Image (cartoon, rainbow, N blue to C red; front, side):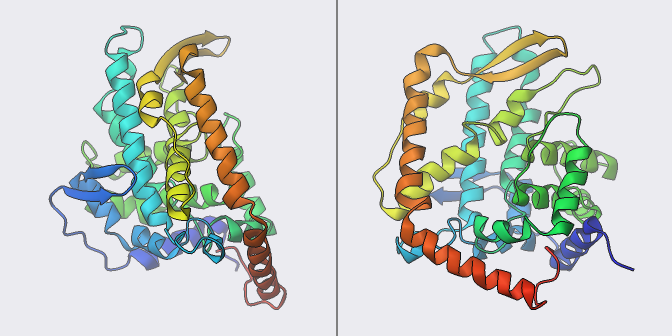
Length: 330
C-alpha cells in the first residue's frame, strides 16, 4: 500500500532525528555578520543543534548564484539564524510601541515574541537541495500538488504557500517532530504533548501565511505579517545577507523601519483584527526596501548566467525524474 504524503514526511523526520538527545542547557551567543551578536535561549539552542536544523547547512541559500558571485555560498542555516534575529527585533519594537497604546498593549508580550522566534527559526526547515531551484521540479509533481491542496483546504483564511513552506508546515506538525519537541526541547510553558502540538500548529500556520485566531474569533494578522508578509523578517534578512555575500552594495535603513512598526486594531464585518502597520511618514523607508529588493533581483536572482546554470541543473533533475531515479517529492 502506498504511503500518504504526511506519513512519508513523518518517517523522514523520525529517521533524521533518531538518536538525537539535546545536551544544551544554557544560552548561546552567535556572532552574526548581518545582525551582530545574537543571544539564543536554551530551548532554541536545542532546536539549532538538532540534525533536522543542522541539515540546512548543506542547502545553498541562493541556488547556483556562486557560479557568478563566488562568495555567495551561504546556506539556509545562516539565513534561518538571521531571520530569527530580525524577527525578534521586530517583535521587541512592536512590544515597546504597543505599551504606549492601551488598545493593542494586551495582544503582544513574551509569549508572542517566543512564538515568532520559534517560527522564524523553523520557517525554512522544509527547503530541499538548491532551495528554490528544486522547488521548480517537485512543486509540479502530482503527489506534491495534492498534498499542498490538502494543506490549503485545512484553513479558512486564504493561503497560497510556496512548495518549501508546505514542506516546512508538514514537518513541523508531524507526529515525530511534535513528540521530539515535547520530550526534549523544553519550551517555556509547554508541559504536555497537546500543548506542544497546539504551539507548533500556530507556528506552522504562520509559515504558510495563515492567520491565527483566538476562541472569540479575534485575528492576529500582525504575527503572520512578521513571518510571511510584504516586509517580513525573511525578506529583511535575505535582502541584506544575499547582497552582502555577493558584494553588491545595497543597504537600507532597517533601524528606521523597525522604529516605525506598529500594531493596528481594525474592525470589519469579520470581527476584530490586529494588523501590522507603518505610518505614512515612513513611506520613504518602505520605498527604499522595495528598491533594494528590486536591484537584488536584477543583479543576482535574475542574472542571465545564474539563470542559465540553474536551467542546466533543473534539466538534470527532470532527467532523474524521467528515468525513475526520483519518483516522489519526498
